[in-house]
Amino acid sequence: MLCALAVFSLVVGIFVSWIRFRAKQLPVDVSRNVLFVTAHPDDELMFFGPTLLSEIRARAERPGVTSTKVHLLCLSQGDFYGDGHRRGKELADACLYLCGDTKRHADVFRLEVLNDEHLPDSPDVNWPAEAVIKHVVEYISEHEITKVITFDASGVSCHPNHQAIHHAFSQLKAKYIPTAVELWQLQTVPLWRKYSSWLDVLFTSLLQQPTDRRRTLPIHLLTFSEYLHLFQSLRRHRSQMLWFRYLYAATSRYMLINSLTQLD
Image (cartoon, rainbow, N blue to C red; front, side, top):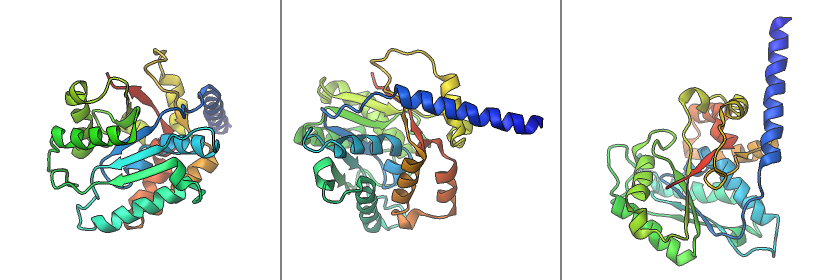
C-alpha cells in the first residue's frame, strides 16, 4: 500500500512539474535567425532535440509571419569510423523528418556539415579554437545570425570535441563575435539526472533556483507525442542506432528537456 502511494505521489509530482513548466514556457522568439553549433551528426537530436524542435515548429506553425530560419552547423562529418559520408546523409534525413512538412522544410531550416581536417571526429584531437570560431563567424555573417546555441564547458557528455566548441566561444567571442549576437549554452546536469528520463522534470522543478530572466531561457520541455517524434527522427541516424542508443533515448532527460544559460 505504501509502495503504491509512493509511486502515485511520484507520478503526480512529475505531472504537476510538467504542467508548471509548460505553462511558464514563453513563446519562441521567431524574430531572430538562430544557429545551433554541434560537433557530430546526431548531437542535434541526442542533446539539443527539445530546443531544436521547439524552434523549428514555432516557425513552421506561423507561415508568412516570419522569414527567419533555424540553422544547424555541424563542425564534422562524424568520420571516426570512416563513415562520415553516410553519417552526413543520415543527418540530412533526420532533420528532414524532424521538420515534418517537406514542403516548408527549406523555408524554416538550413543545414551545413563541415569537413575540415583541423576538426576531425576524434576524442584524441584538441580542436583549435581559431578553426572553430572561423567557421562560426563566417556562418554568422553570411546568414545574419543573431542567436547561437551550443555546448557548455562540460559538453553534456564530456566529449573533447563538444568542450572545444565551448572553449572557442569563451576564448574568442569578445574578439570575433558581434555584440548583437546572443550566445546560449546547453546546461550539463549530473549523471544521475542525465539518465533519469521523465523523473528529471520533477528534479528540475525542485532544484531550479530563481535567476535573472535575461540570463536563463525558459526550459524547453516536450510532450509525449513530441518526444516520440524526436525519437523517430533520431532513428534516421541508422548507422548509430545500436542497442545503447535505444537505451539512451529511453532514459536520457535530453530527449525530453533542455535548460539553457547565457554565455557571458
